[in-house]
Length: 321
Image (tube, rainbow, N blue to C red; front, side, top):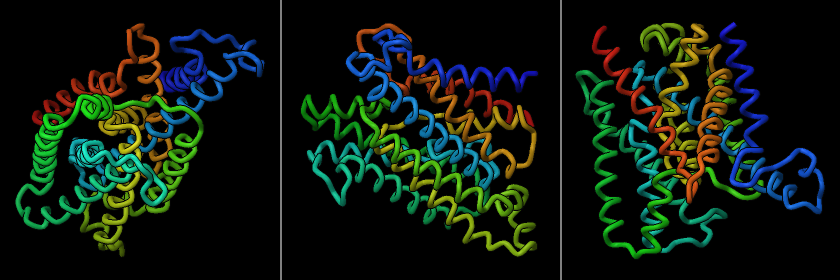
């Protein structure tokens, strides 16, 4: 019964979300091409709903992947500093005034992706020197990188102009405010490819969730599979963060909620985690549009308000074991 109620709630959120915002929309008006409501619904609200859903799917599935591979409930691209690397890269692009297209994409998006990719390479390289308490040390390493990136970002903020600082501030708080179908279609393709890759390796992932040794005995090339999954996941998260800014804690909260609702093996929770992640972020985005404020509430604030206490809960629960 509880599962049924949750699924009904997710469906209601998806159906109601496009009608919530600063301008009230009526169903009879959105199909009238001469009405402003038509443009608002099909050019702004509906693309944003799809963008939020697929962005949440990417973050949630990436969180599930990281937690499974490292066998650590606190591991996500956000806590490991990969998202922070993307933010720093975007901050550098903003400071340098690089807004022109590079290889067909915006300079800010390109530098954001580059920052996340370099962070992953750095983590893989530094992990070679971690011998004892590998998982906990890697988590602390990710947190240290996040703090270091934040310090560099503050230097950029201090040296930037008022216009650059405004752009940087808005980017670091995260935003799903997009217009048109370009980004939603692009992110939906990225989400589909990420889920497809993870699903292709679902049985290897299930073995790796137990132990590396057991996976090796079953003929799994653990290093190769781990590197492929981590690299592609970081690639997708980097692309997303370079567009939306950092949206934290989705990859931390959603996989645990799904695991509580569906206590199944990892390979059977992949699609459920993607759907719940999309619904969760869409619900948070709907809240930002439902709150009546002078300017739209950044999505990163809502997810942090939910994810922060949840992160504390995970740390306390782990310490009791």
